[in-house]
Image (cartoon, rainbow, N blue to C red; front, side, top):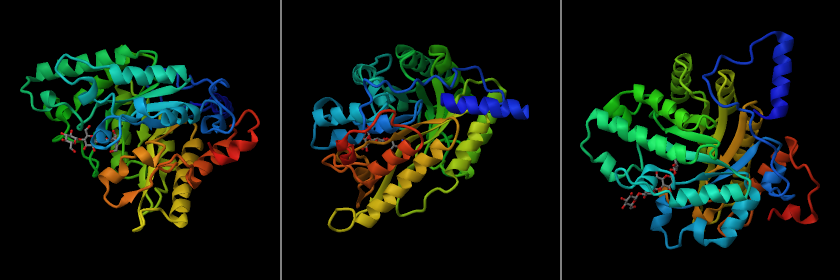
Length: 390
Ligand code: G3I
C-alpha cells in the first residue's frame, strides 16, 4: 500500500472503529516501497510521472519467442532498448529468464546467468523486480515433464527449486508470481496440465507459498493469472482459494491480473471492483502483464482510431489500479512492438505495446503518463522536451 494511502486508510478505519482488513497471513509489510529516487527518475519519464510508492514496470525481453526471431537477445544486445528500460521503468519482470526451462535446465543444475544480470541491472537503476514464476504448467524443462519421479522426489524437486531460486535473490525481489495460471477458463484447477497439482494434489499450492516465504520472508508472494480481470468464474475461484489459504495461515500476500487485452473485445469493466475485493481481504494487488493488441489492417499499421481505443484501455487499466489502495505495481508486457510476443502468438494481430518498433511513443504512452501525473506523480518540473515522450 502506498504510504499516503495507508495513512488515509488507518485514519478512516480508526474513525469508524473498523478493522483494516481480514487478518492476513504472516508476511512482509505491504507498504515497503520508498519513493523513486531522483537520481533514477528523470523528469518527463514514466517513472518520474508515477506517484510515490507506485511502480511502473515492464517485462524484460529475452528467451521464449525471442529465440525464434532474427534479432539477438534484446536485453543484452540492444543499447537503445536498455536505455529506455532504465529510463522509464521503476520495476522489471523477467519475461522468460526465471522460468524453469531457463533457470533449471537440468535436474539439480541451475543457470542463473540471465536472471542475475536482470536483477543486477535493476539494482543499478533503482528498480523493483517481480520474479516470474515458480509453479506453472508451461515452459517446464523436458527432464521435469517427461521424468519418472515418485511423489516424494517430485516434492523434493519443487522444494529445492523454490529454495534455491527464491533464496538466491532473497531481499532483492519485491514480488514473486509464486503460482501462475493454476485455474483454467472455467475456474477449475489445472489438474491435468499442471504437473505439481496433477501428481501431488492441490495441497502442494500452499507448500509452494510456505517454501517461498521460508526462502525470503521479505518478498510478497502472489497468485498471477490471465482472464481474471473481471469478477468472473476464474477470479471467483481465486477469491475462494485465497480465503481458505489465509484462514490456514498460508503466506499469500497478493493477487495479480495479467491484463492481456484486445481492442476486439470490450474493456473488463469490473476490474477495479475485482481488485478491491482482493484488497479487502488484506492482499496486495498488481497488474502484471498489461498489453492491448489489435487486429491490424492490411497495411500492417494501426489506424489512429485503433490507437485511441488502445490508449483508452491502457488508461482504464492504470486508473483501476491507482484507485485501489493496495495496487501499487503496474507492469506492461514489453514496451516496444519490436519485441512483443503478440504477433508471434496471434496471426494478423499486433501493435500491442506503448511504443512502436522504432521506440516512438503511441497515444497509450502519453495516456499512461498523464494518468500517473494526475494521480500525484511528477515531483519535479518536467523539461520542455518532456512532451515528446523520449
Ligand atoms: O520450447 C519450444 C520448442 O520446443 C519449440 O521448438 C519452439 C518452436 O516454436 O518453441 C518453443 O516454445 C517457445 C517458448 O516460449 C519457449 O520458451 C514458444 O514458441 C514461444 O512462443 C514462447 O514464448 C513465451 C511464452 O510466454 C510461453 O508461454 C513468450 O516469450 C512470453 O512472452 C510469454 O509470456 C507469458 C507469461 O509468462 C505468462 N502470461 C502469458 C504471457 C504471454 O503468453
